[in-house]
Amino acid sequence: MALSKFVGPEIRGVVNVVPHHTEDNLELELLAPEERHALVAHTGIRFRKIAPRQHSVQHYFEKAVETLLHKISWNASEIDVFICVTQSPEMVIPAVSCRIHGNLNMGKQTLCFDINSGCSGFVYGLNTVYALLSGLGKKNGKAILCCGDLSTHLIEPNDKSVRPIFSDGVAAVAIENSVDEASNASFFNLETDGSGQHAIEMQTTFKNENFMRLNGIDVFNYSVRSVPQNITDLFQFAGISPETVDLFVFHQANKLINESIRKKLNVPAEKVPYSLYDYGNTASASIPMTIATDWKRDSMNSGWLLLSGFGVGFSIGSALVHFNPLSCDGPIEF
Amino acid sequence: MANLVLLTDFMLFLEDELLLNPGEVAPDIQFKSLRTWSSLNALILISRINDETGIFISASDLARCTTVADLHQLVQNEIHGAQ
Image (cartoon, rainbow over all chains, first blue to last red; front, side, top):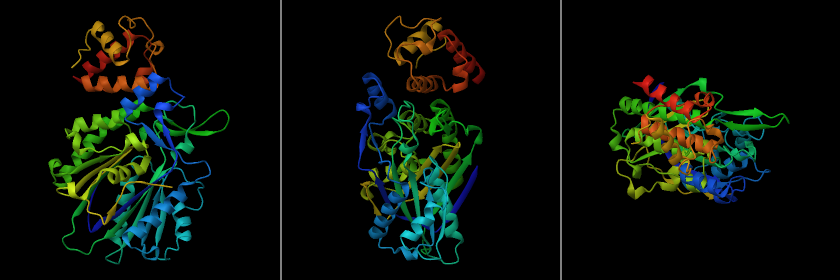
């Protein structure tokens, strides 16, 4: 495991963007009527957002970044670090981050690259941004982290295991290296287990088409076995009591996995928000999506959030961050 | 907490979790041919077994089982292995 601590970087804003079109699992003809109700009850997923085929994740990232910059009154030209986390780029070369950099007229001082990561990708991206900002020569560096996928573009329409779970959506998060000496520290615990590389992977059909396949049982076993320990180690490293945390925001895998993790950690249900019902599993965007749909400034006490993403790889990324942004609103449709 | 040690209790547990009628589960029935068996119900069953016993049944171990009795034996082996 990779435990790390940073003092300075803080989240300033969160924006989520989802497609307008919604699919309802209770009307999914792929499943028998009784299967649909069981699916919603056990996975917690009712609605999923579906992007049209002609849309690309880049356009959703651009919309999210433009909205975010406006909300927190930043200029694109002052961004020092710009990272996109996605597994569904429209094209591999050049990087999505470089294309957006050009379209939004960011400055030449901006460090840009993409990270290929899914379920744990938000926390991996956040860790990378915090490390880069901490190492910058300037004290008040600014970064934007984009994450998310148009996962439905990777799914075989008749796949009963995958289609009812995944949904499209992205997030853009602004992070600034605070010069305030009273700034809170942030803590991370990242780990990988490549023995699970085949549990969620792209596979080629006999028609030479590529689709994402999911071994739900192995993902369940890995997540429920490994995530509670990862989080427990993080609390111990940070010297923070779990009771201090306002919200435990998990990657929105499905309710079966997330509730099993919650129970093993003995966390009260009211501290574990969900966005699954309305937005499904939005891959690396699911943690900021859940924060934005549930976080309310007035209902926070300590301000500490526990974030944990887990899945494809296998990999886990957990973080303890103090959250007091300038702006954090529910998803907007594109 | 469900008792999964006896085969008869395990069959009742399967009936309950897979929303089957009394008598639909028997030791020599191939569990993948059960009326409500699906990839989702397989995941639900594995998560419920974990809830009740703390053990983890892998997809490959499950694939090696054919009948309800095989599945029950697998669960017993994992419970004893974990002790």
